[in-house]
Image (cartoon, rainbow, N blue to C red; front, side, top):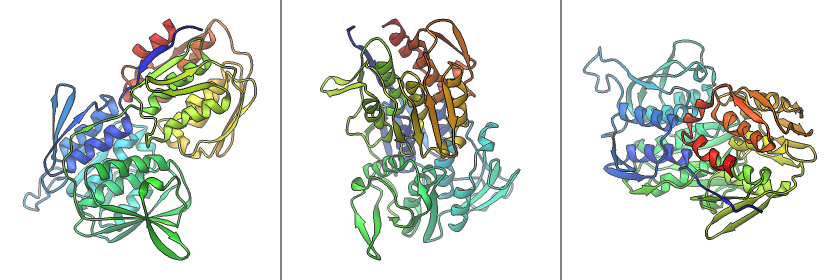
Length: 446
């Protein structure tokens, strides 16, 4: 077999967002090393700077000096009645929007929240309602529960708030990140019928802990609330978990961002479906990132996966279809869906209805684009099934990206079948992984 193709993983997008936010809310200067440089991270940086943080480049690191007295919007002191609201432009970054909205609401003043057209189509009512409970006021410029909106913040004034994780875990993460700025403890209870993407909440708690924000996780057991170590929590039972966040603020910290399992997933899949093994470097095998599940899922499908001192290797193997719940790791669904097209039997991916409100409707988009290769696909209310067929070994297929970075990167995997994918908007990868095609060329050359 060929020598392994070595790929250095990019920095985690999820942790870059959260680390920059914690540094911007801390009382002092933090030096953040290795943070991802992408369109989404630049949106978060710009919003934090608009709220009063100072972020300066120092080589490959960022020196983040925290805001004084939390995020400051327009007319925060009440003296300048004609002061314009602070503009928080989210472009197409859903993570920026959900986290920064809650963080800004923990500050004072008026903020105008808006973004690109797709961002104005993505629901925010659940988070807005929770923030209203805490004292925030909203004036909608269009549809209620959607951007664009004018937000009047005066800090978290309520003691208790409820939130569901049915659409996104980022609503909870935003509340958690903002709550240490309150002047009293805030209890955040998880309600609803189901909870998705729990590992991303774990990433939020990790950053809060590392920047010395005080919190406790409690679960309902035998009718009583019991505190548990947060790292022992692997999933959420709605109506039986809550978070008690103390008004500690944040302390500055020097921090290095670990590698990104979401963006490494395409290269892991390439190792499974291609012609050469792939050796991934810069990833933490014990990471809190939920998307490290890509290794377990590929192994279930038949790929040879090994974790060693020099990195994580994935070797080509005959793949088989599986039935898998991916509610905890939605960002790698397009990756696994394309890998499933290389298998010898059907794959069904379940518990992923929340993919419909991503940068695109990723359930339907994945089904439609994979079907262009001759495979059959079926979309359910909460599932996606891929029924493989022999893949074309040459020729060109045009794939729509829907402006969605994860669609562009996952459809690139079809090049390993021998055909030539033509993406209508390859530049959309800049949202999370500007260097993707440079690294991908190493796969194609290998």
